Length: 498
Image (tube, rainbow, N blue to C red; front, side):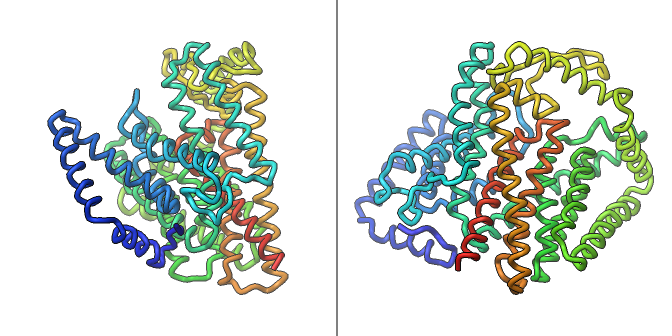
């Protein structure tokens, strides 16, 4: 069976499959579904029955048309990127099925089913074949991470809590299906468009919350106490990838749409007042100039000035009284970063790091296990804080996994990141040397790999002040960015060999 290609053949194949089924199959299926649903309604579990039917349909789709499965995963981010809840929420159940369970089934079919009888087709070859060091180390990391549950349980962490955080890491394994099924410009554009829809959904939510905030504030300090503090990694990646796409894109309609997404997502990121992400994004957008021609540098400068100009004009127009308070808060927040431990929030971070370092010294090799709780005194609020999230991703990895595993994880990320910048440079030189038309897909993949590499770099930078690599949104972003790097590298290798 062939993969769906969005030219109509995929839908036609499904229709033909349905036509070949004999009438008794339809009758038996209909009777079974009606009878089971009636029983489920009698037991008051009809909702779960409905979800099971949807799950089976998605499972069939995944096995036969894996691209649609990945598209569903992107759309599912609209639910999955929501704020976390205590215990096991409906979102967790949804994610564990659509994201992790189906991914596990995908890997099992790749490992256990012979190539000529695979449920998932990929030109008859095993998708798990790895030829580069970073991929081998990537799989090695997950193999050893399985044994982390023993350490976590030994240190008193409930197994279900360990599983919940382990599932976050599993999201990065989407790298492999994305790497293999999305090997052309059209399918990747669809992915980016779906991510744009996810971004718009959260942008709108953030605008509504920000508008309500501005209506109620009287003093500048009130802004910081009510900010929405999730999905910064996703917003930053949308801005970085969108900016590079805008600079390398030839199609005018595409440019306008891309700028619109970057513009509103920039507003969203600014309205969160997450200074580390804002500053890192600005720094990396300036750094991307080494890949640009003078005309593109001028375009970039014009876009930056226009974007911030629109933001403050909009703020002054709709919230004239609050605009000065916002500007005052932003200036104070950025300037306080240079005060060291005199800044109360910085002092809280150092107290947290000191307590975490003490626990690391107790078990530097094996760590304490995923989801391990620790306590420190929150001086700015006057109470002890008990949590598992550490505002330094490097310390967080060492605390939970030990020094060897932390080194392995960040080595993998660094190797991919270096490969990305090298591929971007090679693609840029190849296009210039061969005077390739700007509408050629190689320009598209140049922008894609630059944006993906910048995103990984952004995570490395912000990881110093928050665990930016291990949030649910960032792990999805990491999977796609790593895949984009490998896909772009393949495109370059094909170009130079042809």
